[in-house]
Image (cartoon, rainbow, N blue to C red):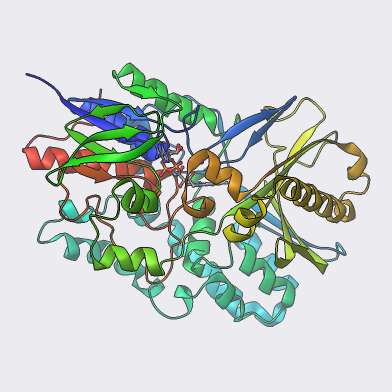
Length: 502
Ligand SMILES: Cc1cc2nc3c(=O)[nH]c(=O)nc-3n(C[C@H](O)[C@H](O)[C@H](O)COP(=O)(O)OP(=O)(O)OC[C@H]3O[C@@H](n4cnc5c(N)ncnc54)[C@H](O)[C@@H]3O)c2cc1C
């Protein structure tokens, strides 16, 4: 019997996962990837003797015994990378060094430390830690809602089943825990703690998401890639290719070919046409729907989503290679500055730092890679990039400003810096084509939390979508599951059993 052919757009996690499951379920698939490397936003690059990991910070459910781990295993990622348990998350320090708090997996200690810092906030701190402690043992934490069927696979009782599974979580959909981290910080009195809670992840995300991150650490479900996230990506690529899949790099899709409302292939920017029975876009959502398909297959819900939903803000990443050793403590630090840092039209009082001292893969012995990631605005960088010299000058200036601030915490660091690399939202867009350089697709908010995005488009046959633009909150497990969903939908429609081995 002839195998059905499938074209997949994009070799990020969504596309690679789609490809693996496609091959396992009897499709003959090929991925077209615009960049010369796989991984999309999960990107790692070399600068001299330093390795820069500009992608995944931590992997959720990195240990056996969770459904998400089993899915990593299905697509060949497991065992291919060195990973260590993340027992500490973030260390907050005020610029004078007089106040310090470390968020780690030890919740009793955390509660004690927080109350010691601000006795006036004791009640609120206890309530918060109680939520983290509760969530740490919740079965949902090791599934993250990933087993929730997409709209195309939902049966009559799925909504009831979801409600039952989510019953403990209903409290997070309204009231205090549904507020943004920034909104929640107003419940605290101490200015230092206010900032700490606001910046534990991002001021815009719902505070229950912050609770979830801390619960995941407390439950031992977060891991740090010791060799960088490319080991994870390359293992999935190997699995895909061993299953017979093929990836064509430097192959940018310009149009999705449609005949009589049926997707039949793609047109690349080099002018070549490629035909297939099924087309899956695991690329940027907006450009897939409005450029590659000319906005021909949208309904009011889709229009509303792209008009009103907020994506994760893009980031500017400043990476420094430093001839210096850093303490092997929490991988993230946050410095609360006395004077705000003005950059790219924004002003911040907290400087986030990622310290890659947990592995010797990133820098030679005795040296360390450190990284500052700042949320920023796409329009600023897009406009600036029109003048290349000015763009380069602003990148240099931001790096200098950051180094000045780090000098306060790490005296002498300026003269120890051997490598400086600045990646802007424009860089991210150039390599991954994500709308406005967004790192993770749609922001998870009170309203997007309960929204389900179909993996299909209205009126278009043989076409599917995967990746972080079809699952609010994005992330590694989410992107992988969306690819799995596409093949599950196809199997269900054909009355075939879904295979997850190969
Ligand atoms: C700095 C950073 C840190 C992160 N940290 C974490 C973390 O700690 N934990 C976590 O779970 N998640 C994290 N994420 C998010 C997670 O990495 C992403 O959500 C996930 O990798 C997205 O995968 P994707 O396949 O959906 O999209 P992408 O990675 O964007 O892949 C899409 C691919 O499609 C290609 N493409 C686009 N358009 C075309 C076209 N027209 N033709 C051909 N190819 C095209 C792109 O080049 C790209 O390779 C982080 C992201 C970033 C940027």
